[in-house]
Length: 139
Image 1 (cartoon, rainbow, N blue to C red):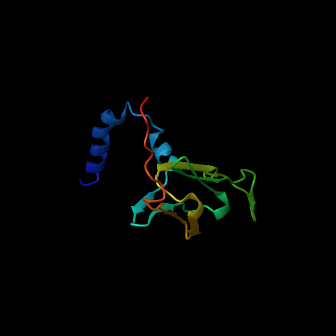
Image 2 (cartoon, helix red, strand yellow):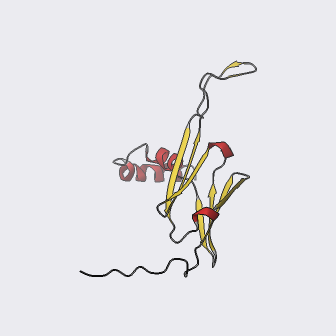
Image 3 (cartoon, one colour):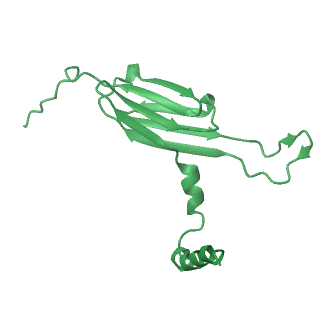
């Protein structure tokens, strides 16, 4: 009897899910990665989970107050294992990209490390007295 309940729930959700894009879940799982951003007194700390990626496949850029993190992992479709060709291969190219607005950063002191699939970026803040407010004269 308990086997019927999951089927019943799936049937009830069929109408609700009928008009949704059937490929939405694929985009969600491949277009983003988990990121934590902490603001400390002296710096922003960004931690991004990039499992299965290598350090060389990560692109990191800070420009116009925006931190951009990108990663691409490509696998050849023609690879063979020691026993021959793959019958089915579902792992292939993965590409991720995220951007974050982080103002008041000392660009020259940004530091990054990658360990155990986690990218950690430290963005030191400028001292408030380093950039005095700009007064604009009205003409």
